[in-house]
Image 1: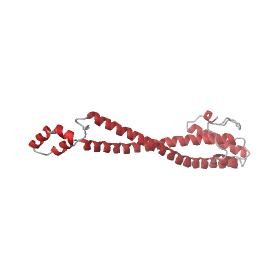
Image 2: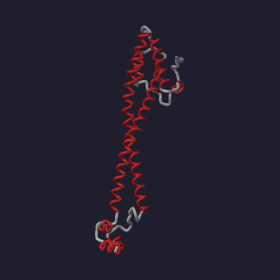
Image 3: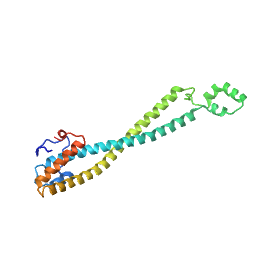
Image 4: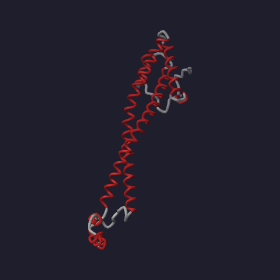
Amino acid sequence: MSISATPDAPALSTMPSSSSPIAHLLTTHLPTSPLVPRLTTLSSTLLTHKVDKETRRQVEQLRGEMRDRWRAEAFKVKASWMAGVVPSHEREGQGGVDGEQGAEREAGEEAQNGDDPLLQPTIISDADGAAEMSRQVDDKVESGMAEQMKVAEEVVRGSVERSEGMEMELWLGQAILDGFSSGAGDEDQAARFVLDRLEDAFFEAGLSLDESK
């Protein structure tokens, strides 16, 4: 399969730089071929697709791992908060004799006004306060995770761009060598061989050639 050469083909939304490693590789080994601009565009589009796909995969995996850790931390915060807001007279009364429990119950209102905060959010007496606390913790978890994921995605993308870029350069270099071998050293035939390889890679990746025009 092949398509006509389009040296003046319209640029993509992000036109590959003439100084990019891919462009340098193609212009070095196919210096006079009119197909070089098309090969550069196809290669860059394919590389961008691979980078986006792999970045999404790694980010989603990382997001799942981070969410599990953040949920565990949120649970600890909620459990600690709940344990800390049980009124002191209830904690001290546990395990006491009936007489002591009765006395504390009678003095419950005074104890609340004395030792404990004015608004005491407990599981039993202040469900609304507990729900609000839980919501605030969840919101903080989501906000914190979103910030960390934003930074993590940039790091992941940078790493993926480097690894996928090197793979693309190696792949193109091998395609150029194979093209020269099959064409008895003819540059034009080598360029068309690379073009066919790129088109095959496009279809294997589920891309349309129209996306590179």
